[in-house]
Image 1 (cartoon, rainbow, N blue to C red):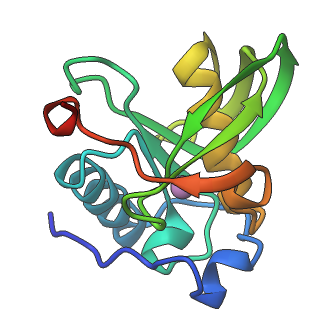
Image 2: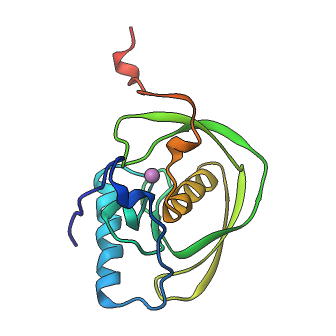
Length: 161
Ligand code: NI
């Protein structure tokens, strides 16, 4: 496994649509492993392939508290959504900044796993937010397009008086 360079906002590759994956070759499995390692090492909740410069519909996520439940989604789409949540959202391609974004509270995601077997994943809260955010990346969309008001830095509690 290896860390990959994360493309930052302003890189035109982040605004392009990703290709559907027809088969997963060895190099794609390597990409998935590298994306997981890159996500964990940057303390991210999710990472989409275009963020490491690859225009394929591949997403990795981990919304667990202990960061030990990796999720791999190939060709993912939101099959069902309901409810609404508004809250801070960040992106490894926009380091240090957050914006308030409204997302569904609950989603069902249809995808393939890394064996190219069909899966349905269902979840609330952070799962729903992260899944929508990452699937947007695959269509060339950034959360900053949806942010209400200006982006802001999140202060650590230690920094507060
Ligand atoms: Ni992102």
